[in-house]
Length: 180
Image (cartoon, rainbow, N blue to C red; front, side, top):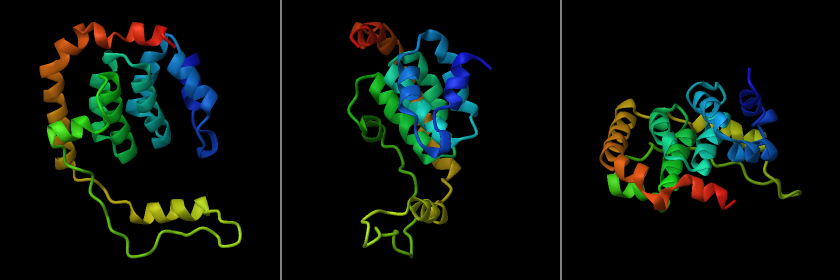
């Protein structure tokens, strides 16, 4: 494995984001692009795919958009959400602009019959293990037809707008990243 693949594997040790690695991947040179795309497509950990989608948006290069569109049918709602948000970020759009403009179908919500775990009255803290178990019990699978429809809408938007986005000096990622 390469340097960037190794860094990607260190993004979420013990289910906690590793900020130094996260920031290093945002600021990495162009050689990080392919390993990031590979991780977005293939990494078994949804938290890593979620972070990678966000990192690609933070890096700000339009070349990531087709790969982020591909992630719109990822099994994880967090990856799908960050992929869409990253496209908006790359294009300097407001949050939820694509949802609104393209009338995307929301992920289905399962209304739970049991209450969300509450903070411990003594410590005021929520047991994260109990919260994770609660989320797992209430997770529902998205409708593949809805995901495919949303993906088609975003792909069409990209086909119509790609030339403008690629050639727009206001969206020049080199100028954006050199300002950091």
